Image (cartoon, rainbow, N blue to C red; front, side, top):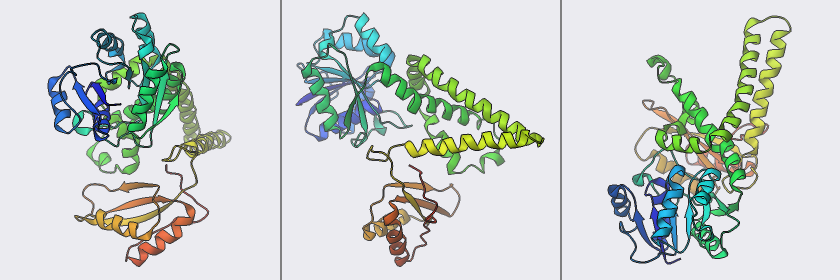
Length: 371
């Protein structure tokens, strides 16, 4: 790929442009809001101008509801030789594309499984997609050349492709992305009118649960609207479980003989199912998750303290699988949780203690699964 056009310079579009520009691809940035394209150009994503001739690939980073008309307009003016998209819903946009009579041979649908709660070109980064799954959802009429162009894009962005049908894709993202966002929003909404004393008790747990609720409401409205039925199905199943949990808690509250035991059994069943579900989540490499353990290190709230800790970690030679930082603003000390393989935990704890740090590993019988 020598040239590309990115239509829509938000977080995803600009991140793609940054990744391609870093690989030497000439990238043209197009947006309905000229300032968005200029901002993306200012951070090094490409040129805020229309390409002088057809580019090798056009990436349509627009909301699902706008995809079909954007593709039709781009094909009409001959923007590119091949086209793809990054919409997080596939079935309805594909139906719209067919209805508009777009050229299906030059289009291969796509969806990178990456993002963040911040939006816009200033939140973009070139490594956003590294190690991530990128769904490839071609139409039966998609040409081999168009699919290869999108596969080249995925490779340049450091992701790896997974081919899925549009309906398969939409059911999957409803479960792992769209319904969780709605649950996070519902939980975060409970905090809107909480008292100051209640909010002051909030720790990392509630921050983890509600983090994604900070995403752009209008963007998520478009996403949820385009996948409404499938998301509703997923939330209906969740609602049944929630009703069961409420009933179990009421039985426990009553303390009545028989009811209390039944409530405890039902509640423990859901909690155990939750642990089982967590254990199925893939690790950072996308493979089935191994059993990692957590080494916890207290960290003072001083400038440069995290940098010093990571330097000490690097000196141990132990690979860190993931990092979690638990620190409430206003407190003088936080903790850093380091996820490592069981065989690396002892060496990491021992070496960090050798650097004068407190390093607390979990009991051998209680591995952590916080991936």
